Length: 257
Image 1 (tube, rainbow, N blue to C red):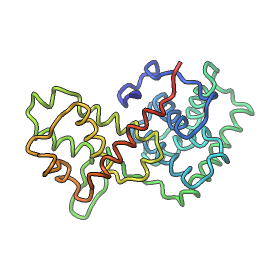
Image 2 (image 1 turned 60 degrees about the horizontal axis):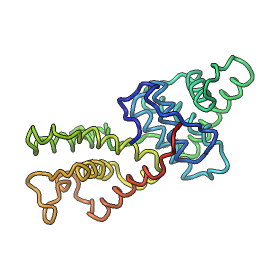
Image 3 (image 1 turned 60 degrees about the vertical axis):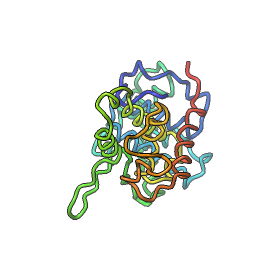
């Protein structure tokens, strides 16, 4: 499993040479590593990953520098989530992550060229996404309705489930931490775009339940599905499809130094 959101110290991030391999999965990993180094909020990093996948859903991956786009989505996500990241910090962190051990860039040609590239790439991404950069996340869905406030999907589902278990059973395994780890890691794959936030949240929790062999009280899998209390349009075969997509992430995990 990759580093969790709470493992924000740089020394806990496994080293990887990004210059040796370049694809969308590796670039998403790059986003998470740089985001943690920048002390960005978890939702900012997740937003950057989603923006990255949405961009390359519309664009040819071979036509763009994936690390430039990844760096730019981090900068843009900071604006979207009101978690501003200074462009100079983004430049230095992303440059140092690509070129391990290098010193911060001086205010010379290389710095200004990279700064201009990020500014231009930001405009490109905005146009490519038709300026639609607001994202509803499985772990946080702050959407105001006419008369109510939608609770955060993942938090809401887990909080409700906790009340179904005994205190001893719930505290026996780190179900919440594992569910969020699965959710984080699913952001490495563009297939996260194919499903609704509610369905993804349920799939991450259900996968964690399966891993620990936990049966939700008061339900019989053959007759009553625990998640039917939260979503009514999720079929069992689709749930397992999402779970399989999440598990595929770990087959693509690169070896680290």
